[in-house]
Length: 327
Image 1 (cartoon, rainbow, N blue to C red):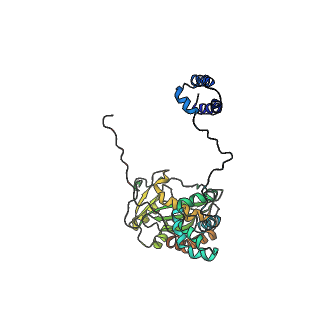
Image 2: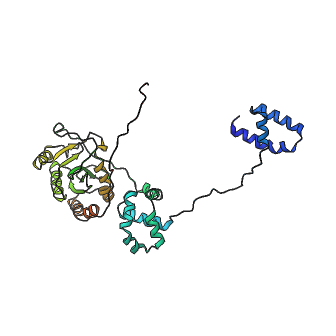
Image 3: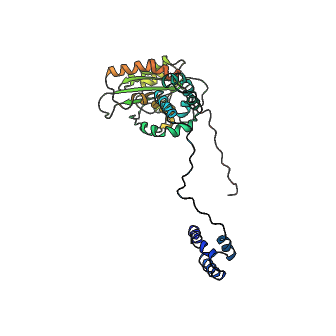
Protein backbone atom coordinates (compact mmCIF):
# COMPACT_ATOMS: atom_id res chain seq x y z
CA UNK A 1 0.00 0.00 0.00
CA UNK A 2 1.12 3.55 -0.62
CA UNK A 3 1.73 5.95 2.26
CA UNK A 4 -1.25 8.02 1.19
CA UNK A 5 -3.51 4.94 1.28
CA UNK A 6 -2.17 3.93 4.70
CA UNK A 7 -2.88 7.41 6.09
CA UNK A 8 -6.43 7.15 4.81
CA UNK A 9 -6.76 3.67 6.32
CA UNK A 10 -5.62 5.00 9.73
CA UNK A 11 -8.05 7.92 9.59
CA UNK A 12 -10.89 5.55 8.73
CA UNK A 13 -10.44 3.13 11.67
CA UNK A 14 -8.86 5.41 14.32
CA UNK A 15 -12.16 6.60 15.80
CA UNK A 16 -13.64 3.07 15.88
CA UNK A 17 -10.43 1.74 17.48
CA UNK A 18 -10.83 4.12 20.43
CA UNK A 19 -14.47 3.18 21.06
CA UNK A 20 -14.21 -0.62 21.13
CA UNK A 21 -13.05 -2.97 23.90
CA UNK A 22 -9.51 -4.18 24.41
CA UNK A 23 -10.30 -7.58 22.87
CA UNK A 24 -11.64 -6.00 19.67
CA UNK A 25 -8.63 -3.64 19.54
CA UNK A 26 -6.38 -6.68 19.41
CA UNK A 27 -8.15 -7.98 16.28
CA UNK A 28 -8.02 -4.50 14.64
CA UNK A 29 -4.26 -4.27 15.31
CA UNK A 30 -3.65 -7.78 13.95
CA UNK A 31 -5.50 -6.96 10.74
CA UNK A 32 -3.80 -3.53 10.35
CA UNK A 33 -0.27 -4.90 10.88
CA UNK A 34 -0.91 -7.78 8.48
CA UNK A 35 -2.08 -5.43 5.72
CA UNK A 36 0.47 -2.63 6.15
CA UNK A 37 3.47 -4.51 7.59
CA UNK A 38 3.82 -1.94 10.42
CA UNK A 39 5.22 -2.78 13.84
CA UNK A 40 2.49 -3.32 16.44
CA UNK A 41 3.76 -0.69 18.90
CA UNK A 42 4.11 1.86 16.10
CA UNK A 43 0.52 1.16 15.00
CA UNK A 44 -0.73 1.69 18.58
CA UNK A 45 1.01 5.10 18.70
CA UNK A 46 -0.55 6.11 15.39
CA UNK A 47 -4.05 5.13 16.59
CA UNK A 48 -3.62 7.03 19.86
CA UNK A 49 -2.53 10.29 18.23
CA UNK A 50 -4.96 13.19 18.76
CA UNK A 51 -7.60 13.58 16.12
CA UNK A 52 -6.97 16.47 13.70
CA UNK A 53 -9.97 17.60 11.77
CA UNK A 54 -9.32 19.50 8.61
CA UNK A 55 -10.75 22.97 8.37
CA UNK A 56 -13.59 23.00 5.88
CA UNK A 57 -13.54 25.49 3.03
CA UNK A 58 -10.38 27.10 4.33
CA UNK A 59 -9.24 29.78 1.92
CA UNK A 60 -5.50 29.98 1.16
CA UNK A 61 -3.84 33.00 2.69
CA UNK A 62 -2.61 35.48 0.12
CA UNK A 63 -0.25 38.33 0.68
CA UNK A 64 -1.93 41.70 0.39
CA UNK A 65 -1.09 43.47 -2.85
CA UNK A 66 1.33 46.34 -2.32
CA UNK A 67 1.14 47.89 -5.78
CA UNK A 68 -2.40 48.66 -6.86
CA UNK A 69 -3.89 49.24 -10.30
CA UNK A 70 -3.01 52.94 -10.20
CA UNK A 71 0.71 52.22 -9.72
CA UNK A 72 0.79 49.55 -12.43
CA UNK A 73 -1.14 51.72 -14.89
CA UNK A 74 1.37 54.56 -14.47
CA UNK A 75 4.31 52.16 -14.93
CA UNK A 76 2.68 50.69 -18.05
CA UNK A 77 2.14 54.18 -19.48
CA UNK A 78 5.79 55.12 -18.94
CA UNK A 79 6.88 51.78 -20.38
CA UNK A 80 4.91 52.39 -23.58
CA UNK A 81 5.88 56.07 -23.88
CA UNK A 82 9.59 55.27 -23.44
CA UNK A 83 9.57 52.65 -26.19
CA UNK A 84 9.12 49.43 -24.16
CA UNK A 85 12.48 49.35 -22.30
CA UNK A 86 13.50 46.40 -20.13
CA UNK A 87 12.58 46.52 -16.45
CA UNK A 88 16.10 47.53 -15.35
CA UNK A 89 16.07 50.55 -17.65
CA UNK A 90 12.46 51.27 -16.74
CA UNK A 91 13.45 51.43 -13.07
CA UNK A 92 15.99 54.15 -13.90
CA UNK A 93 13.51 55.93 -16.16
CA UNK A 94 10.88 56.33 -13.44
CA UNK A 95 13.15 58.67 -11.50
CA UNK A 96 13.90 60.80 -14.58
CA UNK A 97 10.29 60.86 -15.74
CA UNK A 98 8.78 61.69 -12.33
CA UNK A 99 8.09 65.39 -13.19
CA UNK A 100 6.16 64.23 -16.29
CA UNK A 101 4.27 61.64 -14.23
CA UNK A 102 3.27 64.23 -11.61
CA UNK A 103 1.89 66.63 -14.22
CA UNK A 104 0.06 64.00 -16.26
CA UNK A 105 -1.41 61.75 -13.55
CA UNK A 106 -1.53 63.96 -10.42
CA UNK A 107 -0.26 61.14 -8.24
CA UNK A 108 -0.19 61.25 -4.45
CA UNK A 109 2.93 61.08 -2.31
CA UNK A 110 2.13 57.45 -1.41
CA UNK A 111 1.89 56.36 -5.05
CA UNK A 112 5.09 58.21 -5.91
CA UNK A 113 6.87 56.38 -3.09
CA UNK A 114 5.64 53.03 -4.45
CA UNK A 115 6.72 53.93 -7.99
CA UNK A 116 10.25 54.65 -6.79
CA UNK A 117 10.46 51.54 -4.59
CA UNK A 118 9.13 48.88 -6.99
CA UNK A 119 11.80 46.41 -8.14
CA UNK A 120 12.56 45.43 -11.76
CA UNK A 121 11.51 41.84 -11.03
CA UNK A 122 8.13 43.01 -9.72
CA UNK A 123 7.63 45.14 -12.84
CA UNK A 124 8.37 42.10 -15.01
CA UNK A 125 5.68 40.11 -13.23
CA UNK A 126 3.05 42.85 -13.33
CA UNK A 127 3.70 43.77 -16.98
CA UNK A 128 3.98 40.17 -18.20
CA UNK A 129 0.61 40.11 -19.97
CA UNK A 130 1.29 43.42 -21.70
CA UNK A 131 4.74 42.28 -22.80
CA UNK A 132 3.35 39.05 -24.20
CA UNK A 133 0.77 40.96 -26.20
CA UNK A 134 3.31 43.46 -27.55
CA UNK A 135 5.99 40.92 -28.40
CA UNK A 136 6.49 39.91 -32.01
CA UNK A 137 9.03 37.81 -33.78
CA UNK A 138 11.57 39.55 -35.99
CA UNK A 139 12.27 38.06 -39.41
CA UNK A 140 15.36 39.06 -41.37
CA UNK A 141 15.87 39.12 -45.12
CA UNK A 142 19.68 38.97 -45.31
CA UNK A 143 21.33 37.05 -48.14
CA UNK A 144 24.95 36.01 -47.60
CA UNK A 145 27.58 37.74 -49.73
CA UNK A 146 30.18 35.74 -51.61
CA UNK A 147 32.93 38.33 -52.21
CA UNK A 148 35.89 39.32 -50.01
CA UNK A 149 35.41 36.42 -47.60
CA UNK A 150 39.18 36.04 -47.22
CA UNK A 151 39.94 39.77 -46.94
CA UNK A 152 37.41 40.43 -44.13
CA UNK A 153 38.24 38.55 -40.90
CA UNK A 154 35.59 36.85 -38.76
CA UNK A 155 34.91 38.38 -35.35
CA UNK A 156 33.07 35.93 -33.07
CA UNK A 157 34.59 36.37 -29.60
CA UNK A 158 33.52 38.78 -26.86
CA UNK A 159 34.08 42.50 -27.53
CA UNK A 160 36.35 43.79 -24.74
CA UNK A 161 37.13 47.36 -25.85
CA UNK A 162 38.04 50.42 -23.81
CA UNK A 163 37.89 53.00 -26.60
CA UNK A 164 34.87 54.14 -28.64
CA UNK A 165 34.64 53.67 -32.37
CA UNK A 166 34.30 49.87 -32.64
CA UNK A 167 30.82 49.37 -34.06
CA UNK A 168 28.37 46.75 -35.26
CA UNK A 169 26.08 47.38 -38.24
CA UNK A 170 23.01 45.67 -39.69
CA UNK A 171 19.98 46.34 -41.91
CA UNK A 172 16.29 46.15 -40.99
CA UNK A 173 13.80 45.54 -43.79
CA UNK A 174 10.54 47.48 -44.16
CA UNK A 175 8.83 45.18 -46.65
CA UNK A 176 5.57 44.55 -44.82
CA UNK A 177 3.93 41.22 -45.66
CA UNK A 178 5.54 40.97 -49.12
CA UNK A 179 9.20 41.04 -50.12
CA UNK A 180 8.45 41.77 -53.77
CA UNK A 181 9.60 44.93 -55.47
CA UNK A 182 11.69 47.78 -54.09
CA UNK A 183 11.23 48.79 -50.46
CA UNK A 184 13.11 50.62 -47.72
CA UNK A 185 15.78 49.34 -45.35
CA UNK A 186 17.18 50.94 -42.21
CA UNK A 187 20.97 50.80 -41.87
CA UNK A 188 21.54 50.58 -38.13
CA UNK A 189 24.94 51.11 -36.47
CA UNK A 190 25.87 51.03 -32.76
CA UNK A 191 29.09 51.61 -30.84
CA UNK A 192 30.12 48.73 -28.55
CA UNK A 193 31.57 50.82 -25.70
CA UNK A 194 29.21 53.79 -25.50
CA UNK A 195 26.07 52.14 -27.03
CA UNK A 196 25.61 55.25 -29.21
CA UNK A 197 23.29 54.45 -32.14
CA UNK A 198 22.84 56.08 -35.53
CA UNK A 199 20.33 54.96 -38.19
CA UNK A 200 19.63 55.91 -41.80
CA UNK A 201 16.96 54.70 -44.23
CA UNK A 202 17.74 53.72 -47.81
CA UNK A 203 15.47 52.67 -50.67
CA UNK A 204 16.67 49.16 -51.43
CA UNK A 205 19.93 47.89 -50.02
CA UNK A 206 22.23 48.52 -52.93
CA UNK A 207 25.94 48.70 -52.19
CA UNK A 208 26.26 52.39 -53.05
CA UNK A 209 23.28 53.49 -50.96
CA UNK A 210 24.47 51.56 -47.90
CA UNK A 211 27.97 53.07 -48.16
CA UNK A 212 26.51 56.58 -48.44
CA UNK A 213 24.42 55.94 -45.32
CA UNK A 214 27.51 54.73 -43.43
CA UNK A 215 29.46 57.82 -44.51
CA UNK A 216 26.70 60.10 -43.25
CA UNK A 217 26.44 58.22 -39.96
CA UNK A 218 30.23 58.40 -39.49
CA UNK A 219 29.91 62.20 -39.42
CA UNK A 220 27.05 62.00 -36.90
CA UNK A 221 28.97 59.88 -34.39
CA UNK A 222 30.76 62.03 -31.75
CA UNK A 223 33.98 60.03 -32.28
CA UNK A 224 35.95 58.45 -35.09
CA UNK A 225 34.83 55.07 -36.40
CA UNK A 226 37.62 52.50 -35.94
CA UNK A 227 35.93 49.25 -36.93
CA UNK A 228 32.72 47.92 -38.48
CA UNK A 229 31.42 44.44 -37.68
CA UNK A 230 28.62 43.20 -39.94
CA UNK A 231 26.91 39.99 -40.94
CA UNK A 232 27.61 38.22 -44.23
CA UNK A 233 24.97 40.10 -46.24
CA UNK A 234 25.90 41.22 -49.73
CA UNK A 235 25.14 44.84 -48.77
CA UNK A 236 28.21 44.76 -46.49
CA UNK A 237 30.53 42.15 -47.97
CA UNK A 238 31.33 44.01 -51.21
CA UNK A 239 34.09 46.08 -52.79
CA UNK A 240 32.31 49.42 -52.29
CA UNK A 241 32.31 49.04 -48.51
CA UNK A 242 35.78 47.49 -48.49
CA UNK A 243 37.23 50.53 -50.33
CA UNK A 244 35.28 52.85 -48.00
CA UNK A 245 36.92 51.18 -44.99
CA UNK A 246 40.39 51.35 -46.55
CA UNK A 247 39.96 55.05 -47.37
CA UNK A 248 38.92 55.95 -43.81
CA UNK A 249 41.33 53.50 -42.10
CA UNK A 250 38.44 51.44 -40.69
CA UNK A 251 38.90 47.76 -39.85
CA UNK A 252 36.05 45.64 -41.30
CA UNK A 253 34.88 42.46 -39.56
CA UNK A 254 32.16 39.93 -40.29
CA UNK A 255 30.30 37.39 -38.19
CA UNK A 256 29.98 33.69 -38.77
CA UNK A 257 27.23 32.78 -41.27
CA UNK A 258 23.81 32.29 -39.67
CA UNK A 259 25.12 33.16 -36.17
CA UNK A 260 23.12 36.18 -35.00
CA UNK A 261 24.65 35.97 -31.52
CA UNK A 262 27.93 37.21 -32.98
CA UNK A 263 26.20 40.57 -33.58
CA UNK A 264 24.13 40.63 -30.40
CA UNK A 265 24.69 44.36 -29.79
CA UNK A 266 23.17 45.54 -33.06
CA UNK A 267 20.46 42.84 -33.06
CA UNK A 268 19.18 44.30 -29.79
CA UNK A 269 19.30 47.84 -31.22
CA UNK A 270 17.38 46.69 -34.31
CA UNK A 271 14.46 46.04 -31.97
CA UNK A 272 14.71 48.98 -29.57
CA UNK A 273 15.63 51.69 -32.10
CA UNK A 274 13.92 50.60 -35.33
CA UNK A 275 11.37 47.80 -35.15
CA UNK A 276 9.47 49.09 -32.11
CA UNK A 277 9.17 52.47 -33.84
CA UNK A 278 8.34 51.45 -37.41
CA UNK A 279 6.69 48.08 -36.76
CA UNK A 280 6.32 45.66 -39.66
CA UNK A 281 4.66 48.03 -42.15
CA UNK A 282 5.87 48.50 -45.71
CA UNK A 283 7.73 51.67 -46.75
CA UNK A 284 8.56 51.79 -50.45
CA UNK A 285 8.51 55.44 -51.55
CA UNK A 286 11.17 58.19 -51.50
CA UNK A 287 8.83 60.29 -49.35
CA UNK A 288 8.69 57.56 -46.68
CA UNK A 289 12.48 57.20 -46.72
CA UNK A 290 12.88 60.98 -46.35
CA UNK A 291 10.45 61.01 -43.40
CA UNK A 292 12.33 58.18 -41.68
CA UNK A 293 15.68 59.91 -42.16
CA UNK A 294 14.30 63.18 -40.79
CA UNK A 295 13.25 61.31 -37.65
CA UNK A 296 16.52 59.35 -37.41
CA UNK A 297 18.70 62.48 -37.74
CA UNK A 298 16.80 64.65 -35.27
CA UNK A 299 14.30 63.57 -32.62
CA UNK A 300 15.11 59.87 -32.38
CA UNK A 301 18.88 60.36 -32.20
CA UNK A 302 18.54 63.01 -29.48
CA UNK A 303 16.01 61.01 -27.50
CA UNK A 304 17.73 57.60 -27.59
CA UNK A 305 21.35 58.80 -27.25
CA UNK A 306 20.88 61.56 -24.68
CA UNK A 307 17.77 60.77 -22.62
CA UNK A 308 17.44 56.98 -22.53
CA UNK A 309 19.56 54.91 -20.09
CA UNK A 310 21.35 51.86 -21.44
CA UNK A 311 22.44 48.60 -19.78
CA UNK A 312 25.65 46.67 -20.42
CA UNK A 313 27.34 43.51 -19.15
CA UNK A 314 30.37 44.79 -17.19
CA UNK A 315 32.44 41.61 -17.52
CA UNK A 316 32.34 37.89 -18.18
CA UNK A 317 34.17 35.24 -16.17
CA UNK A 318 34.97 31.74 -17.31
CA UNK A 319 33.75 28.93 -15.06
CA UNK A 320 36.24 26.14 -14.34
CA UNK A 321 34.92 22.69 -13.46
CA UNK A 322 37.04 20.53 -11.20
CA UNK A 323 37.26 16.85 -12.06
CA UNK A 324 38.72 13.87 -10.24
CA UNK A 325 42.03 12.88 -11.77
CA UNK A 326 41.54 9.25 -10.82
CA UNK A 327 38.38 8.83 -12.91
